[in-house]
Image (cartoon, rainbow, N blue to C red):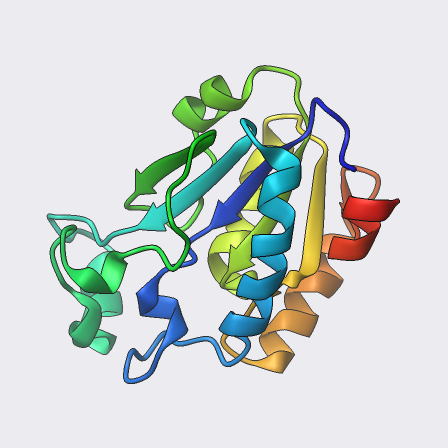
Amino acid sequence: MPPESEWLVVVDMQRAFADPPSPWAAPHFYKALAQVERLLPAYRGRAVLTRYVPPKALTGAWIPYFEMFPAVLRPEDDPLWDLKLPACAGVFVETRTTLSKWDEPMAALIGPHNPIAVCGVATECCVLSTILGAVDHGRFVRVIPDACAAGSPQGDAQALGILAGFAPMVSVASTDKVLFG
Protein backbone atom coordinates (compact mmCIF):
# COMPACT_ATOMS: atom_id res chain seq x y z
CA MET A 1 0.00 0.00 0.00
CA PRO A 2 1.20 3.54 -0.66
CA PRO A 3 2.36 5.66 2.27
CA GLU A 4 -0.53 7.42 4.00
CA SER A 5 0.95 10.81 3.15
CA GLU A 6 1.20 10.13 -0.60
CA TRP A 7 -1.48 11.51 -2.90
CA LEU A 8 -2.41 10.18 -6.35
CA VAL A 9 -2.76 12.68 -9.20
CA VAL A 10 -4.51 11.09 -12.18
CA VAL A 11 -3.93 13.33 -15.18
CA ASP A 12 -6.63 13.82 -17.81
CA MET A 13 -8.22 10.37 -18.16
CA GLN A 14 -10.81 11.87 -20.50
CA ARG A 15 -12.69 10.91 -23.65
CA ALA A 16 -10.48 13.30 -25.68
CA PHE A 17 -7.52 11.02 -25.00
CA ALA A 18 -9.36 7.70 -25.13
CA ASP A 19 -11.10 7.25 -28.41
CA PRO A 20 -10.61 8.03 -32.08
CA PRO A 21 -11.53 10.09 -33.98
CA SER A 22 -9.98 12.46 -31.44
CA PRO A 23 -6.55 13.43 -32.77
CA TRP A 24 -5.27 13.11 -29.19
CA ALA A 25 -6.36 9.48 -28.64
CA ALA A 26 -3.60 7.52 -26.88
CA PRO A 27 -3.28 3.95 -28.21
CA HIS A 28 -2.82 2.38 -24.75
CA PHE A 29 -5.38 4.53 -22.92
CA TYR A 30 -7.51 1.59 -21.80
CA LYS A 31 -4.51 -0.40 -20.51
CA ALA A 32 -3.57 2.61 -18.38
CA LEU A 33 -7.20 3.09 -17.30
CA ALA A 34 -7.34 -0.48 -15.94
CA GLN A 35 -4.29 0.25 -13.75
CA VAL A 36 -5.70 3.57 -12.56
CA GLU A 37 -8.89 1.79 -11.51
CA ARG A 38 -6.76 -0.60 -9.42
CA LEU A 39 -4.89 2.31 -7.79
CA LEU A 40 -7.80 4.55 -6.79
CA PRO A 41 -9.09 2.48 -3.82
CA ALA A 42 -5.63 2.59 -2.22
CA TYR A 43 -5.72 6.40 -2.29
CA ARG A 44 -9.25 6.95 -0.98
CA GLY A 45 -9.47 10.53 0.24
CA ARG A 46 -6.07 11.33 -1.34
CA ALA A 47 -6.78 11.17 -5.08
CA VAL A 48 -7.19 13.97 -7.60
CA LEU A 49 -8.59 13.46 -11.08
CA THR A 50 -7.62 16.29 -13.41
CA ARG A 51 -9.47 17.47 -16.49
CA TYR A 52 -7.94 19.43 -19.32
CA VAL A 53 -10.13 21.93 -21.16
CA PRO A 54 -8.95 24.43 -23.77
CA PRO A 55 -8.50 28.03 -22.71
CA LYS A 56 -11.57 30.17 -23.47
CA ALA A 57 -9.46 32.90 -25.06
CA LEU A 58 -6.59 31.66 -27.19
CA THR A 59 -3.44 33.74 -26.96
CA GLY A 60 0.19 33.33 -27.92
CA ALA A 61 1.30 29.79 -28.69
CA TRP A 62 -2.22 28.41 -28.12
CA ILE A 63 -3.37 30.02 -31.38
CA PRO A 64 -1.18 28.01 -33.80
CA TYR A 65 -1.49 24.93 -31.57
CA PHE A 66 -5.27 24.83 -31.90
CA GLU A 67 -5.01 25.65 -35.60
CA MET A 68 -3.41 22.19 -35.79
CA PHE A 69 -6.16 20.61 -33.64
CA PRO A 70 -9.42 22.46 -34.39
CA ALA A 71 -11.52 19.32 -33.74
CA VAL A 72 -10.80 19.55 -30.00
CA LEU A 73 -11.45 23.26 -29.60
CA ARG A 74 -14.72 22.73 -27.75
CA PRO A 75 -16.36 24.28 -24.68
CA GLU A 76 -15.68 22.96 -21.18
CA ASP A 77 -19.04 21.17 -20.95
CA ASP A 78 -18.60 19.23 -24.21
CA PRO A 79 -18.68 15.42 -23.68
CA LEU A 80 -15.18 15.22 -25.19
CA TRP A 81 -13.86 16.51 -21.85
CA ASP A 82 -15.76 13.97 -19.72
CA LEU A 83 -13.68 11.78 -17.45
CA LYS A 84 -13.57 8.06 -18.22
CA LEU A 85 -13.46 7.47 -14.46
CA PRO A 86 -16.50 8.21 -12.34
CA ALA A 87 -16.11 10.85 -9.68
CA CYS A 88 -16.58 9.09 -6.36
CA ALA A 89 -16.41 9.80 -2.65
CA GLY A 90 -12.97 10.83 -1.51
CA VAL A 91 -11.78 11.78 -5.01
CA PHE A 92 -11.28 15.40 -5.99
CA VAL A 93 -11.84 16.63 -9.55
CA GLU A 94 -9.79 19.60 -10.72
CA THR A 95 -10.09 21.32 -14.12
CA ARG A 96 -7.19 23.18 -15.71
CA THR A 97 -6.57 24.98 -19.03
CA THR A 98 -2.86 24.22 -18.88
CA LEU A 99 -0.73 21.21 -19.81
CA SER A 100 0.75 21.05 -16.31
CA LYS A 101 -1.84 20.38 -13.66
CA TRP A 102 0.56 21.40 -10.88
CA ASP A 103 -0.13 24.89 -9.57
CA GLU A 104 -0.65 26.64 -6.25
CA PRO A 105 -4.29 25.47 -5.86
CA MET A 106 -3.20 21.85 -6.47
CA ALA A 107 -0.36 22.21 -3.95
CA ALA A 108 -2.81 23.64 -1.40
CA LEU A 109 -5.28 20.81 -1.94
CA ILE A 110 -2.62 18.13 -1.44
CA GLY A 111 -0.87 19.86 1.43
CA PRO A 112 2.56 21.43 1.72
CA HIS A 113 4.76 18.38 2.26
CA ASN A 114 2.94 15.33 0.91
CA PRO A 115 4.63 13.34 -1.84
CA ILE A 116 2.62 12.47 -4.92
CA ALA A 117 2.23 9.60 -7.34
CA VAL A 118 1.30 10.60 -10.89
CA CYS A 119 -0.27 8.68 -13.74
CA GLY A 120 -2.58 9.38 -16.68
CA VAL A 121 -2.26 10.83 -20.18
CA ALA A 122 -0.35 11.86 -22.08
CA THR A 123 2.97 10.72 -20.66
CA GLU A 124 5.02 12.95 -22.95
CA CYS A 125 2.85 16.01 -22.43
CA CYS A 126 0.55 16.65 -19.46
CA VAL A 127 1.97 13.92 -17.20
CA LEU A 128 5.55 15.05 -17.83
CA SER A 129 4.78 18.74 -17.32
CA THR A 130 2.76 18.03 -14.16
CA ILE A 131 5.61 16.03 -12.66
CA LEU A 132 8.20 18.68 -13.52
CA GLY A 133 5.98 21.40 -12.05
CA ALA A 134 5.65 19.44 -8.80
CA VAL A 135 9.41 18.82 -8.67
CA ASP A 136 10.01 22.55 -9.15
CA HIS A 137 7.89 23.07 -6.03
CA GLY A 138 10.03 20.63 -4.05
CA ARG A 139 7.77 17.56 -4.19
CA PHE A 140 8.92 13.98 -4.35
CA VAL A 141 7.06 12.33 -7.21
CA ARG A 142 6.52 8.70 -8.04
CA VAL A 143 5.49 8.07 -11.64
CA ILE A 144 3.50 4.90 -12.36
CA PRO A 145 4.34 4.04 -15.99
CA ASP A 146 1.89 1.17 -16.49
CA ALA A 147 -0.90 3.58 -15.48
CA CYS A 148 0.23 6.12 -18.10
CA ALA A 149 -0.48 6.33 -21.82
CA ALA A 150 1.26 8.39 -24.46
CA GLY A 151 0.44 9.39 -28.00
CA SER A 152 2.94 6.76 -29.15
CA PRO A 153 5.21 4.09 -27.62
CA GLN A 154 8.20 6.26 -28.52
CA GLY A 155 6.70 9.23 -26.66
CA ASP A 156 6.16 7.06 -23.61
CA ALA A 157 9.72 5.74 -23.62
CA GLN A 158 11.24 9.18 -24.18
CA ALA A 159 9.22 10.82 -21.39
CA LEU A 160 10.04 8.05 -18.92
CA GLY A 161 13.72 8.30 -19.88
CA ILE A 162 13.69 12.03 -19.16
CA LEU A 163 11.94 11.49 -15.82
CA ALA A 164 14.45 8.81 -14.77
CA GLY A 165 17.11 11.52 -14.94
CA PHE A 166 15.40 13.42 -12.11
CA ALA A 167 16.17 10.83 -9.42
CA PRO A 168 15.94 11.06 -6.44
CA MET A 169 13.19 13.66 -6.84
CA VAL A 170 11.34 11.36 -9.25
CA SER A 171 11.07 7.61 -8.85
CA VAL A 172 9.38 5.03 -11.04
CA ALA A 173 7.18 2.19 -9.76
CA SER A 174 4.63 -0.14 -11.35
CA THR A 175 1.07 -0.39 -10.13
CA ASP A 176 1.89 -3.71 -8.44
CA LYS A 177 4.90 -2.17 -6.69
CA VAL A 178 2.77 0.72 -5.41
CA LEU A 179 0.00 -1.59 -4.20
CA PHE A 180 2.00 -4.53 -2.86
CA GLY A 181 5.48 -3.18 -2.19
